[in-house]
Image (tube, rainbow, N blue to C red; front, top):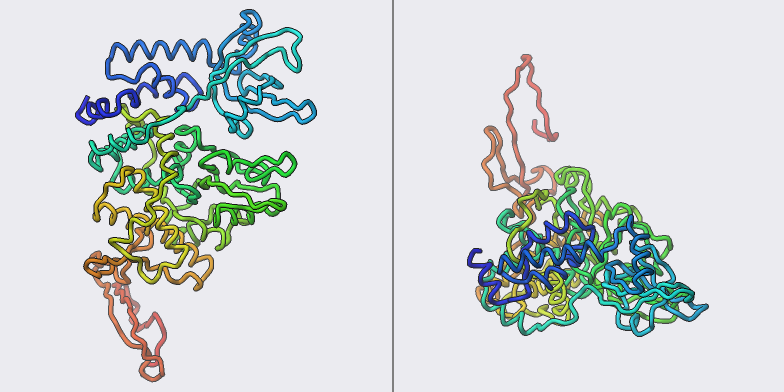
Length: 536
């Protein structure tokens, strides 16, 4: 082990696991990473190789005997019947049977339905009612019981019951900023040494919705860059809506059952493949806009609030250069969502094209937090806020409007929670976070300018250092920087010049022009091309 791994095992003993163990088990079990690492955390949270190997065998045995494979469902049912009691690992979803006035569970892999669940279990685990959760369940069998002979004796959600946030904050003091970034990325299963500094910022930004309430962002880019990985595998507090089709009742509120939807049950609702997003209800997008702006929505006579962040991920099928020149970078969204009012509610646009396609070396074999521990402390950080951390050092330039300021503050707050959960950061740390936050919001504003025209003309984002009163502008790589004239060396025969308008008209405005000279085979004639003028 290197020094960082040794330090990590000393400071957070029992909270870390070797990520290559997760990969070893993941290849043979189709369960989320947080399920595997929950079990690894129980048996392999140590740096003792012999204990780790024994723990691996124990976890394998548990998965082999208790994890339900769909093709072995009948065999498991038989074991429950013959033994009278048997423990299974499966994903459970619970519904209320109004006619019988009982809760009934459905098992995803086991294929059981209408299994009676005691109200106390449902009350303690509300997520069972929407989307379901992975659990370790002790099953019993009672012949002739109604509505099903299979009975649910006990249930243990596969997630950490509690977390000592003070332990985490105290431990953070033992690590430098760069070490902490490496730890965060390795906790997500990624190897930070294989990514550029800019890519590391983007990978961290993917975690902001996990620790910041009502944070709205999108990430579009090439395939195989892990855009949806963190929302599907890392945390039991997030849900990935695949396929795109959903309903207002499922997402927000079911008027018939009077139950809140996904936004009230999860910390993050992520939509995979944005091009396919489709609401069965005509008012779905409008309700989503209201929720993204205020964190609340109206259904019937009630105003309902929730704190779930909204994430939209999808693929870009054209080159970024082509989209920038011919369209806009939000083009993959469905037509019904191409609306400035909708996109203006986004706090950040993560450029997925700046993250390399994942290959085996991008995944870590080193120590990182057990992902369930990571997910729970990020959830705990949702109770805190660093939105005002900017004020003692910087203020915003005049191109940032109210929604821009709110978006940048929320991104800054989220990144500070990730990097400095103990609140111990300096001015330079804050400057780097602020610059990144301004960039990802400006990327949204640039697209709004293309879609909505001059209403969104003020895209030159900047911040002012309160100590020196110097104003610093923030540019985007895909927009060609903040200068009209590139700082790169020009090809031979190319020249920029400044000139006034037509001397014979009232237009005396100063403009910048580019002259390009080319030597081509002639035909003996003088041909003048370019913008017409009135030269005599």
